[in-house]
Length: 85
Image 1: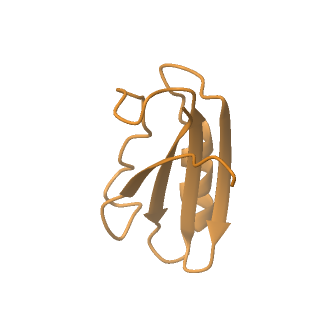
Image 2: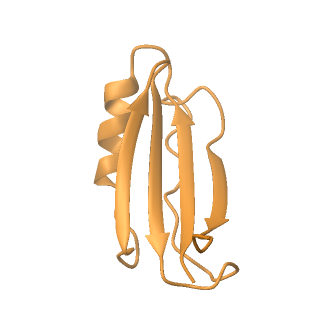
């Protein structure tokens, strides 16, 4: 099974570049199968990691950034891959 963890945060206005750099610098306890980092308007940053693990596996996740860098708590989602029809 493949599980995708999504981590999304919104930086304080004008600090999106700092949040992006911070997210890229974060190392996990284990390496995922794949890791991608995205940015979007409103200084948002999204990191998706893919794991060959069961849905409920204990997996390393990116931490919360310093509160002065973000406008709200990080949003986190977990998805499992679905076989194509």
